[in-house]
Length: 420
Image 1 (tube, one colour):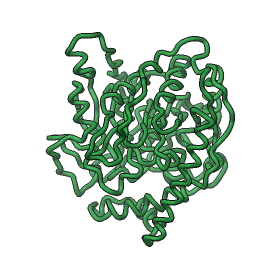
Image 2 (cartoon, one colour):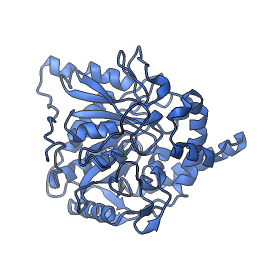
Image 3 (spheres, one colour):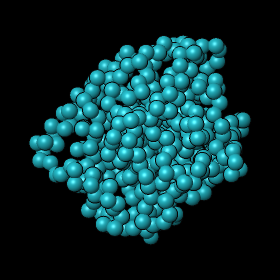
């Protein structure tokens, strides 16, 4: 497939360009985000005919910057699956190989960018929904710090984890979209007031050692998760490349409790309280029903205990990022697999098939509110994309951009849609 992707234009001066930095740029919007006058289904049968009267903040800001919203991208109902499928239509397919999954839940957005249909697309992320499909489709996906891009309307169940972010072909394009969408909105109680760092300056760092000022850790497993051998090898090569660009690199991981043992009880309770009552029962797939059954209702005392564990978890992560500027891990435990067939064995270890095992590396950072990005990092022997994930302390998107941009210049990744 020959893509129709084009690089996002750089500012060239003039009042019109300054007031509309994305003038004419085609952007697709994930169908979990409200678009005025354009159907927003949330991937749900219940909302199949829903047409919002108002844009969500991210879309409103994209329009104000001159972007052309060309359409909505596929998502599982309320983003509750690791593959992009719903009862409204066909499953999303991976442009690299249509027999493969896109991952989820922003799989439609990653596929649109990978196919060269748009310059950029939006994603949302509560447990890897930006970075996982970006990894599987070979795009760059940036999940900023919680609240950097405000959410409205925001249900109570989304306050702790839900983040919006861009999916693009290049780091510079992601920065351009992020800078437009970011900014405080008082309607979102989690919205950040702190401005973004100078991300554009991090795009242009040059010299033989552009990462010499950074302390970087890398971990193939976070000491918790089995990983495919080829994924492990590509991520190790990425860590070596970062060292070659001047960074001090150690193999290390934060000392925390098992992230899923904390994430799932909170996520399960919040989802059951906020989404289950409003979603058509026909929307649910068996894997979602099984997740809810695994984590039954909690007492108020038990839930408060989970929140206490969450604060301790975040404190431990903060301590780790006092020692390191960036952490590198796999973005997903496996590359893209055939649609509807998540692996039961990963790296020689038998696992329960499902998103909690094929994309477990993101949940710790949604728990911690940290920014992350999936950087294209080569392929498997049979050509499936692999992404390495970059993580930084909350509010330090600039460090992620610095590393991702240096890697992009040193090891240019193919533009989406360029092959075939």
